[in-house]
Length: 259
Image (cartoon, rainbow, N blue to C red):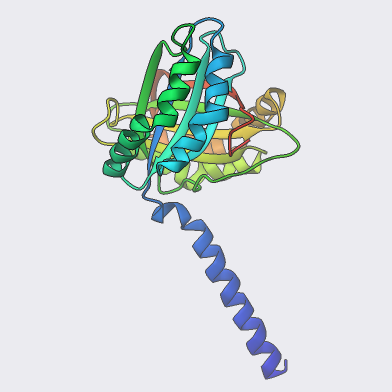
């Protein structure tokens, strides 16, 4: 082979490997604090709540340094929920941003106007999280073909969260992708949060609920998964408690950056 051609090819290979390594390491350098917030709205008030987010809240969050990640509503929304995820550089920045947001006259006016006929939020749940070292770094992403999202929460058996994360890191996330599921983000709760010692929270997407069922059926029958599960459980049984896997299918809102 001509030396010049060989050198050029080698340089391209090295560059491609470097780019690939950088891409795979994105999550390990993403130290942002994420907050998952769940709002419960009184009967008939969810459209008003969504309208406030669409027309005011998301823009005001951005104005005050709060990063909008994604907004979803459950497909079977019996509890009138809005689920969303925000990001901050750190917890101190979070507190400062919310302080300025709450004091903003534009927010106060929007809140007053939308609540003139009664409260539109009856309960708020909030969880502080950080990405696992195997998670993609969530960012704006629009699938024009349409898709559904699945929020999954795992409660690990006592002392087994590290083993559960290892199984996801070494096997599960790649097998999900192999079987048509898109990995959006994987989080563990921050150390001061209730359940931090045993919770894994993640979001994946599918073309549809039917596609999700098909993908999970193929995943569970995959010899690579069967082997990985058996090896990870050989010294103590299941890595999750009984009833410790919760799943909820979601639709992205029209104002979500991930949809």
